[in-house]
Image 1 (cartoon, rainbow, N blue to C red):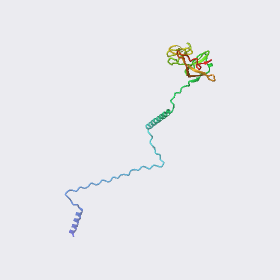
Image 2: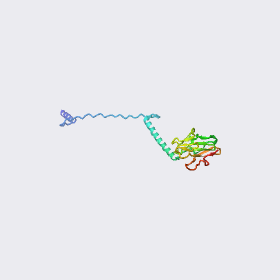
Image 3: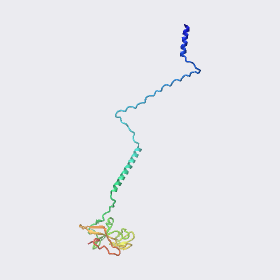
Image 4: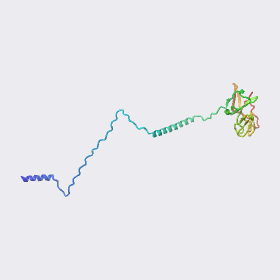
Length: 217
């Protein structure tokens, strides 16, 4: 009975104990514990009707934007004006060559210079006629000055001299100054037309006695 019990005990131990080989068994290291990753935090839900604030635009960007828009608007405006200018006539508007200077009774005997600056003329009245001298030197086209103390016209450019009727008598002027066309309108006003001139070429017949060169008194 004892031998049978011992045999069963030895068989049980042989089942539990592993066979021993020539090398010593190395125990395996314990496995690392698994890392638990926390779930990502979810954004909090926005409340209904909430206003989302946007960061204001930097001042530098605003200035750049204004400069760009100003350049674009200026360029387009210039192009539009050039487009309009293409359809406008290229003309020079000059004052009319015909104008009124009053009645003959408004002038005294002698030379009147009140229209010199506006119309470049002098009005000369004698005992029998009134006429208009165009204030242009026949030498090089300068405007002479009336010297009342010397009773003559004197050109400041080259010294040409003319009497009160515009007849040259000194200096390089080759001939007398021209006279403008004059006539009376129905109201008795003197109408002057400086586009129609009467001259006295050197060595030729004068035009100063033609109708229109003067108004008889």
